Amino acid sequence: MGHDISGHNKAGEEIAYARFSMGNWNARILYNLMDANDYDAGVSGTGECTTFSIQQIEKAVNAYMEYFNSGNILLDSDIQNLDQKQIRNFLLNCLATAQKEESVKVCFG
Image (cartoon, rainbow, N blue to C red):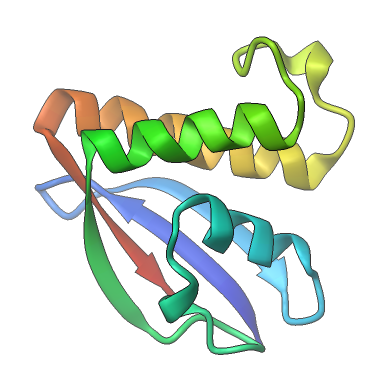
């Protein structure tokens, strides 16, 4: 069991992936940043997918920067924790796709 969260472009290709063990509370940080707590089933995601707009992903990126007090989300040197880096990369990949395609599909497994 665990949280396997993936982002997909309109062609259905996986463009982002984050994996957390069932006991890793950092999964909740990603759910919270994305305002996606309804997709958190405790030990894993619900198995459902939803579509996020550019604005929703931008809001999540801004929340990440605020939460981790990161002045520049793009700099690896600002990242102290592997889960923070995983969350950051997931959000940035989703943002890049949303900016290109106007939305991104995220699945919470």
